[in-house]
Image (cartoon, rainbow, N blue to C red; front, side, top):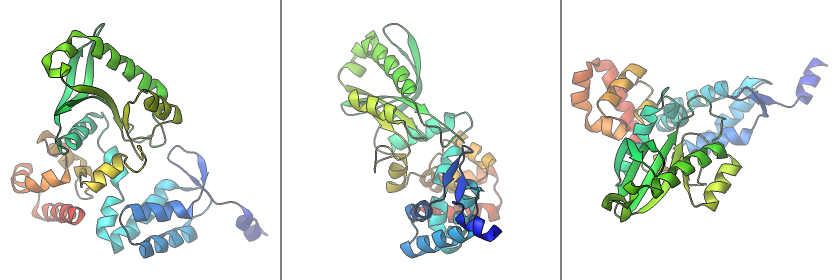
Length: 287
């Protein structure tokens, strides 16, 4: 009777926000495939997790089990699977995330200025970055959500930053040659998702939003994966102390770490065993 009751109960999981949601074979399958695993392996993993899962299992535990299987079978997919967690390691202050966003723009040919004080018509503001390329100029804000993966960016944040943008555009600074000859736009970059109202407001006023899975098929994760712009925090053997040293040396991306590797290992005094592990992970990821 107990087994019959358990079989009749819907299988649910507990997400990062502590809420119940139905277990999804398709989500497990898709997440493994997005990391770069073969279709066959993704199906095998989803089937195994389905057998392993029980009512109330945490999505964090499911993540660990999928990660373990990917690392055993397809190491590159195993590293890529931790992308979101790697971005969450760019904290807790959020400033490393701003540096990372700056590196993303620089690698696409933009000239980036971080943490700038700009004078508007009414007030002076500190903005996270501005980026320019040819006739375009972005006034950018970053919103880092760290562990609150389910917390979406509400429309109030978009409205607040758009008001700041309008005041800046009305100020004398934007009439100077640096700004007046460029097409100026606002962009908000986040590691989180946006609410429907945020997306609707941005579309109405043609504001640029870049977040997790947004814009559709061209979100933050797509930009990172399509151009190999992985943060150093994605490497399993790179601990927080070494990550901090990398940030101090302005090494934000895995590909930059490889370029500066010999000099960095000497300066950071990394053991040969650990250095070999990190170097191999970086090469596997970017292969």
